[in-house]
Length: 386
Image (cartoon, rainbow, N blue to C red; front, side):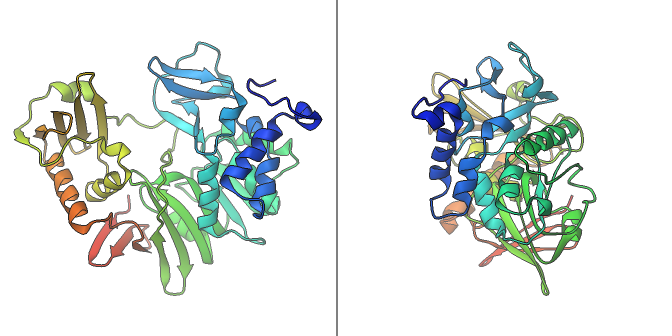
């Protein structure tokens, strides 16, 4: 029996997970919703038997308590680098970044709501992951109209087996989501982020169809509808971040080299206009700097004495390091072809001048190459196709 399982009542003694599933349904839905009985009846723990938790010692393996699996607002990392938690032994400590997870249930339902799903539609689930999302879709709608894809063959096979155990049989395929897709769809819902809208998604979206996706590094959820006047949509007010698409077993190395940049002397040393902030965790600011400088990466650390440091780096060789105590203005070292911290300060100027994050609620128009033109009043920005 899972740690933390309820023991109240004969039904719960037979299937203790049901109390957790009903609590989850209460948190992310309501009894009048058609999603409520679906969430309450899907054994999420069957899809996430093990996961990784980041601790001060690295990645630790978890196989309970069961309540963690049914947490409404928690994603569970199921794969680190090439190491899937299903295959791990106690004491394993993988190195690397998360490469797959079980999406937090509340966010999954929110993405489905943005997609405006309905009976009789062919739905593509991009990013099978644990398979729990595919289970929700297959139980809520006709499973023969559901296709779920992932780049990882093991994830697809494991999800298909776990779905079949519940007598759910959606089409589950190993597919690189950035390449050609295996059909035409009325709805495309992505649980991975993309730098721009893949052209294959546009090709696979039927006239009148709708897709929902997040843009890498921006926390932006974009909904797109294929209309006679083109592919149009908007940035929703729901912030969300998903792991980005990958084409192989792992992501290529691209983390901020904090050790090197900690010691580097800047070609230019100045005082910043605003206090140091952990940009990656400030989702509105993170989105705005990502739109201004696509591909920028962030690092951050806080010392016991109140000193904290933010580092920015870009593949073009630009970098910045800002250090200060508390809310003091930081000393900023910068190098490379662009002054990243200056750009960040300019973005913060715009944010304060406007009084809001202009990308939220922005209109979106998607070109044939997948680039996205955003507009909100006089403000405009472009997410360029890769």
